[in-house]
Image 1 (tube, rainbow, N blue to C red):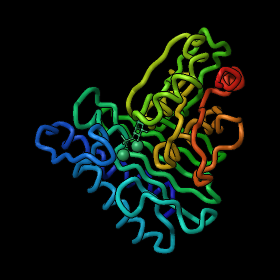
Image 2 (tube, rainbow, N blue to C red):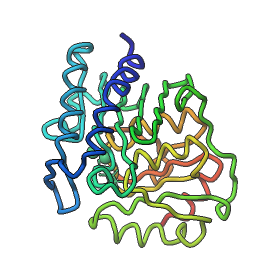
Image 3 (cartoon, rainbow, N blue to C red):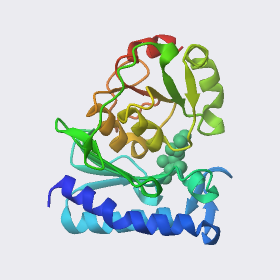
Image 4 (cartoon, rainbow, N blue to C red):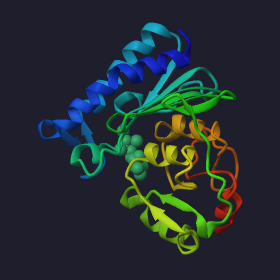
Length: 261
Ligand code: IPD
Ligand code: CA
Ligand code: CA
């Protein structure tokens, strides 16, 4: 089985479970992790457990990084084969039912660069898939970023994240917030980033995102013609230990970077 076949199958086999649990979210067991709004459900744990079991069955020598528990560390060898998973991105949306804006995200990386990625939005019936240098699709149709060139005609998703980042965002992002056409914040990094691949949003900004939050979505946007970098325009690598990233349609990338202090 190839990596893309594995990801495609895993997402197809597990979207229904997430959908059922979202529909019955009043019955979820919910705990909090680092803060009262950093939530964990049995769905996060079950999906991660299922993925790990399957990866170990098909790719027993590969490393695994995932958001929950002991897997939320960088791999021993950051250059070797590694799977990167966020079982549910947007857990707070999932629990509260704010929107059905949550995603399952699974990527395969080598040398700290995502090579294959898949994102499924179970309640929106959307599955995005990408392989490095082979393009990206949504439900089988090719994805393409927008051709918008100017900030006043663009939309940015500024991810306000947790309290720890709030002051940094206010000071570093104030120029872009006052220059760009529209601003969104969806509460799911994965869902926000892949909207660049569909051409509906031009940029996504976060001050401290973890690799599982962006690995698959980064590749999907890059394979749709977009660009992903650190905030100093250096390459975005999963395990470089650095914080802050900007993902855009490419056309406005340098203009957004120039606004960030
Ligand atoms: C969170 C979301 C959110 C981002 C946080 C992430 P989770 O992931 O992607 O948009 O701001 O930094 O931790 O906890 O819902 O998987
Ligand atoms: Ca996440
Ligand atoms: Ca998560």
